[in-house]
Image (tube, rainbow, N blue to C red; front, side, top):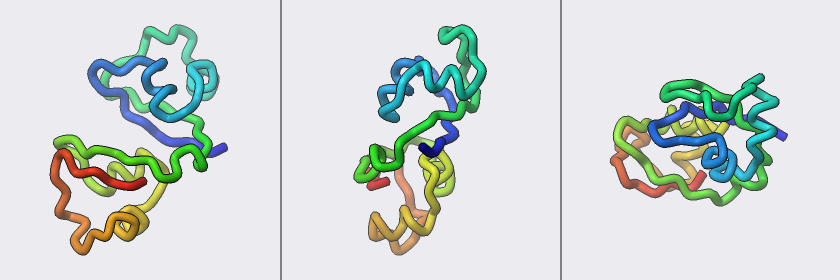
Length: 102
């Protein structure tokens, strides 16, 4: 099992993050030594254990402020891999709402 570093965003819950990555709240709590699952905050970086096979073929919709580098970091991949999978000639041309294959 690999891990992804995820930055908590407004409205996130551990349940929602766990569901998003196909893992469990308990695994996230254990990996991050969090005792109270309701005590996460915007901007907090948490380690999420994921099965990389679960992420295969996953589609991510970009948001304002996203870069290919930040998305690659979030999903444990590289800019080069994302650019290749998505047929991107210029990885700097990324717009909110773009659908990317992870």
